[in-house]
Length: 112
Image 1 (tube, rainbow, N blue to C red):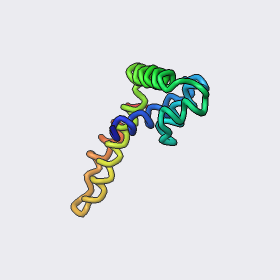
Image 2: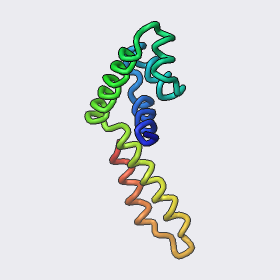
Image 3: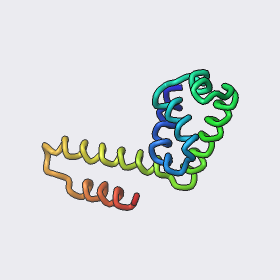
Image 4: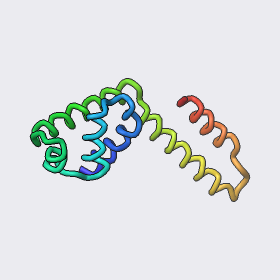
């Protein structure tokens, strides 16, 4: 569940501007503020089922945006490449391997 929550938080960060205000509000309350379905339903004076349905539809939309735009995937790849670069620099006690670092930088550039 934590992995799904983390993924949804990232997808929300990347794609929230593509959501309606109501979708943003429900997702923010549910995932960022950790409100229950009942609490959100009470605040908006609707049923828990309506909140649940809206959140599930919005999750599907976020996943569809990610399938097409790949912003989160590219973010993860960038993070991985940056970590590899840091690791290369840290183990540079031996002669510095500039070629490896250049290859990593080129990989980063290709992501954009």
